[in-house]
Length: 591
Image (cartoon, rainbow, N blue to C red; front, side):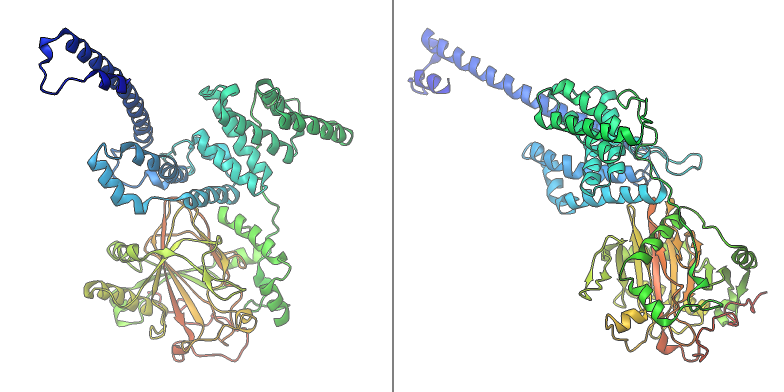
């Protein structure tokens, strides 16, 4: 059309159009064509702007922009939605708005380096699956954004859309967690049915969700319900050979199982959700704590060879038991034997003021656990110091690493999900003074020398952030099997764990072999010895940081080393002597 119009415009640009009817007729045709093109452009722009408006409203409706704080991202589903939007939506919107708005284009160029990637979406899905496993939360609870904290006034989350739910289904499917897969698929299936946004015969997402739902039901043992969903798919896709094959196979399985178990469910999964589907079942855990077994307790029944075999755990049996205890203790306080309960009931608090500084400002000490002795120093730092330490760490944060037992190298791992920063000596003078002041207070509280202590390590735990059971010191296995050489400063004799910011829910510090469970409290610090007085590792100090369920958790680690404590904590030849007689623990300085 454009070439035709150009061909009829043979007159020169200087021609006077008004003087010829033929020229006017040609100009009229040109205007008709321009109007057509403009109409198409307006239609396309209106569709583009409508899409942008819908997305903008979707984000605004999910967030409360009257609240300037971080309440929105304290909820795990909101954390996922933010990450997912950047990967699924904002990257596409950059192309839609490019060259149309300089402010937006400039913002995209500036912020693009910080955009989450697909690996962040995958990590966020695994984090929510982890929270689901440990805190026994249903898929429907997360996907609807129900409050995770029972307290009155606790916030709700932004519900998941169908595309997000499908990602959770696929991740559970790929890891062959069939009951979990069926639970997420059920939620996606009923959500897509209720909203009626999709027409099943023409909707790819409806077919995909229903397909996963039927297969995961089958693998989870819900064969009757798998047949019902498969039959529903065939109503809309009657000629799909794979679905027809699935239905035939499911019916064969049903007949085989019908002989063994005739108690088939009468409920229809098409009309009513299975209330227990996707529910994480409580594990039967026989919690037997190691103080009864390991050296470092009042009695010993294992040899050092037994201990080394347990730590090495060639057949992974001890790890399975330990992880069950880990999941149970993260959720609730463990049951205690009458003897342990009697010891816990006798724990005390006191003021410590045996140094000039602590005499003027006594240190609040709580004996939090009897074996291993765990102390809590309350208000060991103040809010200003806590905020400054966090501010110093923020630009230095890097993904936390662990030692690979096979290679001996540092690498990231799923059992330690956080970011860390080391506060070295190259800080500004005013900031350095604050760090030194905190160090002096730690020395006053612990009576340990800071000469060979490590620099402060600040950790930030985000979405489902955790650190599974581990030791802080080198064990005999580390020294003998992994050939870890001792440093000049010696082993880590003690740990001080300072809580800079507490999470809204979750994130407890637990000792899986002793039963201790510490709930994070801002500005307080937990302290324990990792090494027995004879220099051997204390094997009941294995501990873990439970996943953060809501909010964020900031902690600071301070590790004191062995070789500079000859006068502050002398060695003792008695192999398993504990700290019961230590003036640090017995409340001698009580006012």
